[in-house]
Image (tube, rainbow, N blue to C red; front, side, top):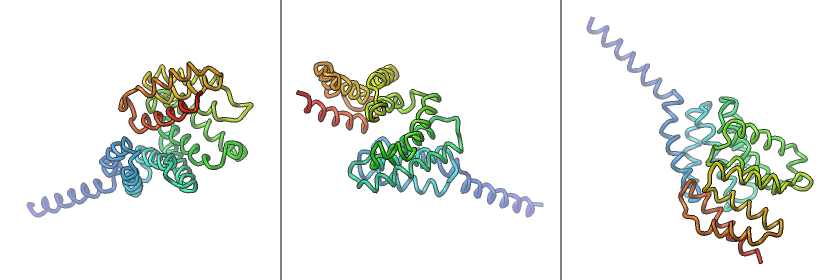
Length: 252
């Protein structure tokens, strides 16, 4: 009897060990926390390179896990958004981000993350094409469709970035779709969600500058310059400050 119990115990331990190895949740959990920590340092090239390595390993271990997929898409979007990389590298990374996010959407279509990073992945993919070529190739529709779905699910996601992205869209899209009024409305909606948003202020400043209101634009840019870093997303805050300083230097 004792021998049979020992055999059963060994079989149970083997089954438990196999479950620990193949379970996406168990395999992915430590990596997901690591990816979140690395994302907070993504403007450090070493941290971004490490994030890519961790994401690729996590995908190999859990290729259908929703949390793994959208975080991997976030890594590849960050690569596409890195100005230190070549245009071709950024385009490939953006397309990979979109593909991974689409797999996340398939895994969980009613969660915001997949749709959000899918929209941003499309943007990274199309960056080197130029707006008109992207529109002609139907990429604009992919972008707006995913962003609308993300907006419907949770407009506050990523520190209120969804209305900020709408503001950028209405500022950058060529005439006749360019709409500074909608850009202003979107930026103000972003500030209602996240009053600390520096990029929302930056886009409002751009609107005011385009409307020949330099005093209003300069006041917002001064707010950005004076704001402390680290209130919601330090890498993004630093980047918004840099862009705001460039705009401020161009206003007479």
